[in-house]
Length: 260
Image (cartoon, rainbow, N blue to C red; front, side):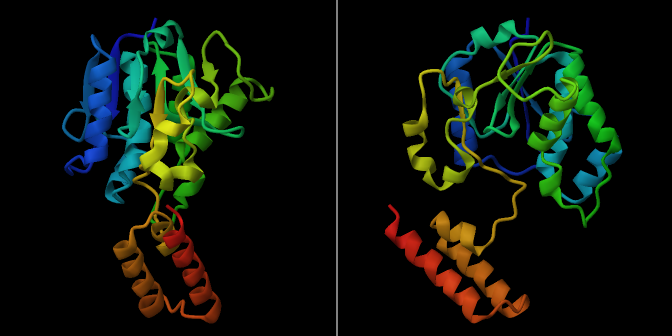
């Protein structure tokens, strides 16, 4: 049985924004009787080549990728991304040896992971990071945790199709359990409750700190100051000024204003 311990990571020594504080408050509301542990630079061993390089590059989310697996393997419990809004008790989930949730039909995500101590699947995921070399030229989109976990799971099943079923070591829950609010709809975060289904335990709100947003992303999210600053950089520093670029900017700007 998975112990009643919630693990989360907070690296970089920054203040937690309102969204993160709201999510952590939801854990305390629904997960009474659980111990909540924060892992950061002061209380976890970061002496690992992947982690040390991620720290140097200030890729905090990728530091957390390794640490979440490490603390789960060593202690057991449930890991939560700090942007995971809990909406009901987790007690039924504790009966698993290990669980994840599907992000979509193609990927298993890792915004929430549950495992008993020394779980074999967690160990295999953790081992993947021993063979990943990163530097300032690394394309981090190719080593996100959903990619790592999904690859490991497919290997774990020896090539069998990815589907919802209970294995001795790992349970993969459907999208509706933790990811009913899709990543492609993250601009609609104010209405995330509209996506909740009757099977939903928690909702991932996609506050992806590792993503490098461009001016088009900021326009979609109605973050006009950030969009303007990115636009200036693209025009004056990156020399992106062209008819097609300005046409694309205009199209996104108009769409942003029309969308509620």
